[in-house]
Image 1 (spheres, one colour):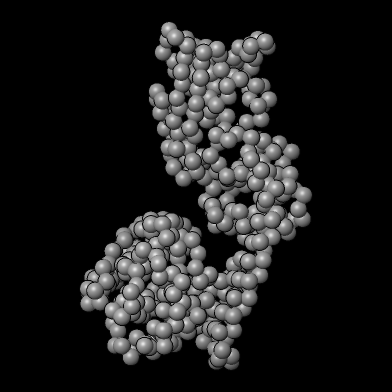
Image 2: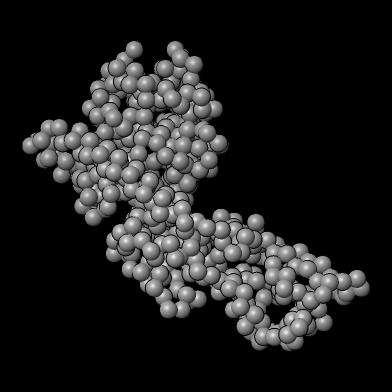
Length: 428
């Protein structure tokens, strides 16, 4: 068995019970080597089902011919191929936009416990560390690419991360493999290409083992990150106390336990918690957390991040994304466009009711207290302000009869249950 194949097989040994191994196959050198190695091993070993995934970004004309190339190679190796066509959203970085589209497509393919295998190698790890170091990344960024991490319902695995690129090139040449060259890889106007073609060759000329040393440093920082994550979990335990509104399907943390931590431990805990929801802010944007934490009026406090925002309310911080960042459409019966669903019941003989949202000035008769202003009643309930504009109200004959999910604000015989949207979808 070829040494590279033996190392690959050893790295994947704990993962051979996965139902499917998907291979991220661009058609380039690295992914072609990974595909060939796995297809060859599958003829000798009992491996999970292999499926190649090729993402077509549609960003350059030469790429239009790559799906046909990938199909030909996969057919020759007996590996089924799926071509995933994506649209790259415009943004400040074309590289980041393409990466987001690519991994989004990969994520949608993965079922529980399935693996996506990618061909990043030791030189890629060194390049990543240097790139992030020059951008002023912290320990989380300088830990580099993990050997495996969650992706959608499955896992992203990099089984060649401890192999130098020279070993992949040597294998490809010995096996006379056919691969495509992406013209954009030669564009040194892109930061990573500049590092790869200009900076790292000079570094290697002076320190031949630089890539190995940088990758080793990334490993040390990865261990440090594990310790910081463990500390974050300890610090988050108290902040993960149950929220006062169990029907509100939003991630949240209690503010008081966070405020009791040092600023450094606050940032560490929040980085760990936010990593599941959004790309993390760099050091220049952490002032947004300070402003949210110390806001004299929590109702108007917000910290906007790449993929959503944090709001304060009811002594907690709440993560909002997806439909929670959009203005909901007008209610239509029991349907609330962009705002979940609602159900209600009235007393026998009650006439047709109408669902509305707050306009201001509403009042409701509270037993033992008489007619009371709804705004003041919601203030007393402690309901976060960002929920109040979405809160369904039930009117009958122009009179407010029920406020969703707040039984104390429902007239006798009236009930109203609201199922709010999650962060990920428009309907619960």
